[in-house]
Amino acid sequence: MDRDDTGPGSPAHRLLVTGLVFIGMVVAVVGSLGTPLVPLVAAVNHVSVDDAQWSLTITFLVSAVATPTIGRLGDGRYRKPVLLVGLAIVAVGGLLAALPLGFATLLVGQAAQGVGLGLTPLTLTVARDALPPERARPALAILSITTVAGIGLGYPLVALIAETCGLRAAFWFGVAIAVAASLAAMVVVPSSRHRPAARLDLAGASTLGIALAGLLLAISEGGQWGWASARLLATVAVAIVMLAGWVALELHSDHPLVDVRRLRHVVVLTADVCAVFTGVGMYLLTSTVTRLVQTPTSVGYGLGASVAVAGLMLTPFSVGTVAASSVTRALIRRMPPGRVLPLAASVLLAGMVMFTLAHGTFWEIAVVMAIAGLGIGAIFAIMPGFIVQSVPAHETGSALSFNQVLRYVGYGIGSSASAAVLQAHTRPGASFPADSGYTAVGVAACLMWVLTAAASVLLPRFGDRRPGLSPTAEAIIEEEEQDIESLASVVPGDAGRPDTGRPDTADTRPGGVRPGQPR
Image (cartoon, rainbow, N blue to C red):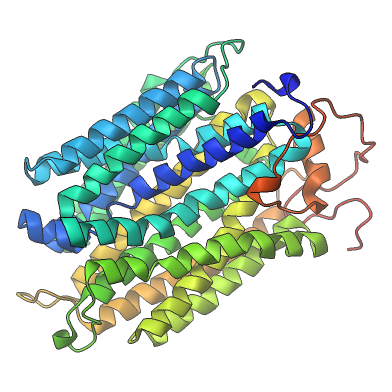
């Protein structure tokens, strides 16, 4: 299944992309096991909802550390074994969460499943290396959208299973699909034994993990510790020092976990900054909606829905991310890809303004989630192309992994922040926050989309306008005007691509102008 062993229309490439999409969907569904189930986890394990929120946050914490580690290993000859081992860890994590061994064991299982989220950029790297250049870009877009769409699919599915068969059954389902994904990976993922072995930066991985853990712990426990308490300030200080130490380690390492020097390229910097803000805004909304919908009507503002209905309220989000494929295709035909980012952020801002002002009915929340899915799907569809066009081929896995790390950091911050804000609006002794808490979360999410739009507009005005491009990236950029094709139409073209004669003066930064396009 190597690139030069397949010709146009080869079933091998179709099978590869289909298999990678399935793996991406499984990873997304497993990653969604926490969000709609948080209130149920609290009830079954007799813990507070805020403590139960850690069943989601710990997944993102582990994924933030596992992602660059897996990405670095995936840049070498052990890509397929790393993918299989990662899926095996996900299955074991699901098993631990499914067994009735207590809340602590469930947290360990959820932490293990965070490794699965680190596999997402590895699927992107496989597609990048195994597909010919003219088909790599649409495949990357599809895979990026799939991982987000899978979250919307996973929410109602696992919620329905949990309601009909119990909480443990939802985790058993995660075990089953992780095993199925492992079988798919065995069949479709090509070997990369011909590639040089990658060295792993253990010091960088451990330092990054401590820094992120401290940051998320401070956000999660700030309400209980006190936002000006010595304990919180000390935790934040340690996290900042460790983060600074991690950057220093990466800059002086011969084999860094992440090549942070790539952030000097304005394309990479814009994509990475927007990834953080998008992740925070996304989970401020999704974590909050599932709690709001399940809040009893007797509180005065809740919808009193079951966990299954709460999951179904996330379906419009999934539909929106899928629709974003066609919308993004049309937009790229008419404007540079970089201009899609502020436009998508503006759409998301409009949706969050609606949520902030009106979230008392099912239809209002459904509309908000559809708008959110459309905007987030557009952002995540365009982001992989930004990364691919700016790094050498051998650094693609690491660069995509770091972007995914920042998404997961954003997810974790959003998850923790939503719980912290709602806790701050909960009266002592009360079981549910005041309605003003959801309004406050909406305002915070609005701020994230304002920052996303500002970053996507302002950052391209600074820095290196012309980052060094890999030969494959040169060909991929040529395809910006092509459709983001449907999954069935992702078939290979010629493995080798002739010189396109693309002018060297083309502005490849986000918001830049392609050859022949008027300013």
